[in-house]
Image 1: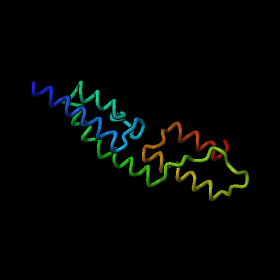
Image 2: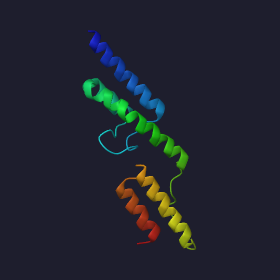
Image 3: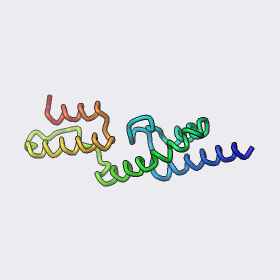
Length: 120
C-alpha cells in the first residue's frame, strides 16, 4: 500500500517538476527525450527505472532550457537577403552548428538550414 503511494507521489512530482523547469519533447536527444506527461507515465509504470532516470536527465533538461534562453529562442530566418555578405552567412552557419551541438536542432533540420544558407 505505501509503495503505491510513493510511486504515485513521485510520478506526480516528476510531472509538476518537468513542467516547472520547461521540459518538452525534442529538447534533448536520446532515450530521455520525453515531455512532462511521458516522464509521468514512465515513472508511474516503471518506477524503479523511470524515477532515477528522470533525476539523471533533470540536469540535462535544465542545462538545455538555460542554453535555449541564452541563445535566444528566435528562429533563424527562412528568407535570405540577396545582398547578404559571406561573413554573415558564416556567422549563421556557426550559430546553426551551435544549436545542433546543444541538441536544439536535429541533424535533418541542421542540413536543411545549411542548404538554405548555402543556396544549394
